[in-house]
Length: 248
Image (tube, rainbow, N blue to C red; front, side, top):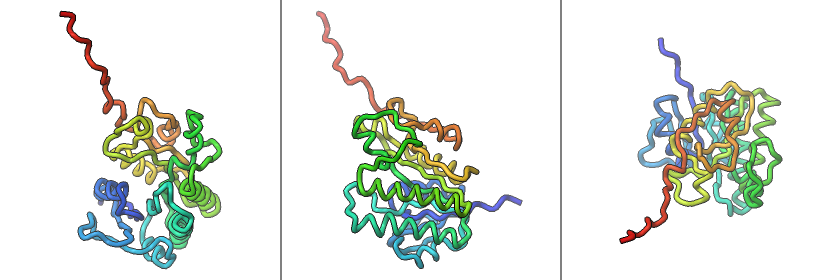
């Protein structure tokens, strides 16, 4: 008899990352997708809707699942406090607490490079996941809160929490910044499933591809999660110098 698939809730499944994960993980896991408003043709049948700031809605969403991938948030670095508070702080607490009450034992939290953004501003590279947080925005502050909340739920309640500091999720890198912070779709899918299946009680890791020019360290993700990124932004960049003219 085949082993029963892990039941995984993805919050914020309507975003770019959520859409990619749903399409590529639906054969690996029994997915439930959470949307603010349901799309017309979701990729799986198990769909829930609701606002993450509504605790009762999150209780309904987590009922019966084994794990949660929490993506739902206002992702704008310019997001004002009036949006950050309900969507990124109260919403994250609601997901964690509803999951705890429902007996969920694994949470993968979508954090961000903006938790450490001031290191990037000051060109203080390389950046390691264990350094003190230096958020560059209220968005970054809200994600630092989520990481701290995850640490608390891991230590206090024994829930395995993996926080992924996601770089720049793009189909292809297109400029110098994306050249070192790119996260390809297939590497994103891989690091999420490795986080879901990791036995670690807690961890914070950078989620970027194997970019030759990266400024953020992914050694711990490779060693502790078994992450094996397949893509490197450098393959999209070639020498654009004009060829030397003929001497004739």
